[in-house]
Image 1 (cartoon, helix red, strand yellow):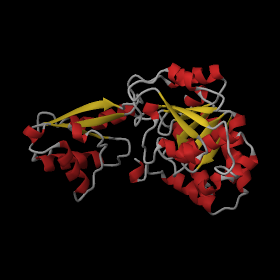
Image 2 (tube, helix red, strand yellow; image 1 turned 120 degrees about the vertical axis):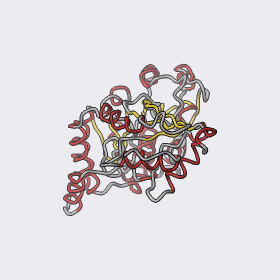
Image 3 (cartoon, helix red, strand yellow; image 1 turned 60 degrees about the horizontal axis):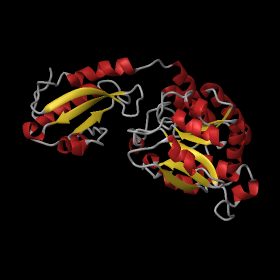
Image 4 (cartoon, helix red, strand yellow; image 1 turned 90 degrees about the vertical axis):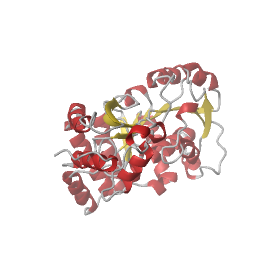
Length: 351
């Protein structure tokens, strides 16, 4: 979660950051060589390291509206650009810590919402394309509406049929090779699934990446990436490629919470899969306020404000539940969480 610093890089990633930070490099050369290295990892024609997935949206939009024109890039928001419309499904214009639309406008685009909050069809996107359309934007995120929305593959078909680029925001996705196959520019966070330093990746077709690099001398100057960050990200990518699917291990860790079932009145624990369909599993703590003597929000607040702060995925507290994500946990963290749930609900410790 970004509000908690996203992830904890390994010692080897931190060592790579130290090595990069304490060395001198030609930054332009590093941008090119690091991009080539990332592209080999994700299977794209080209790539560039950016300072966050969020900036990746702004820079990608700036790339497609300026089309590599240096003057337009340097005078973004000053020179009129006719072909600047970015089409997005209404259910994808979400707030992820900042609104998606803010990043689009920062990049010189004008957002055009299509479809409805509960329905996004291919024809909604296709029918909105006109001579002012610069790109389609697809947001693959748990924040976005999942129900009754077209897939990224369907959006890609629309883009190809209309001859316009597709930008995919896949910030937190774990499959780094999937989205470059169905987009012209795919955006990833370097600090979420990859567990590197705060950073981002934009990967895709060579022409669009070259257009994006022009932005590094425009709005991208305020989003520049330090050499230490680049070194750390490349090390994290190497380590990420060696990691196996951890879903079974995570489900095994969650069994400690499942064992609470039947032990604490009003508390029910189930294992649920990530709402965006990723191979991520979490423990869902459902609270029957009448039986438990407190609401899900009250229990969640106690966990967060206790002597050991436990932050949950609390999007569902008003519906009576919150989720425990095992991915960032270390050591005996799960045992601590279990003990605190017992303490705050009046359950006995599991000794």
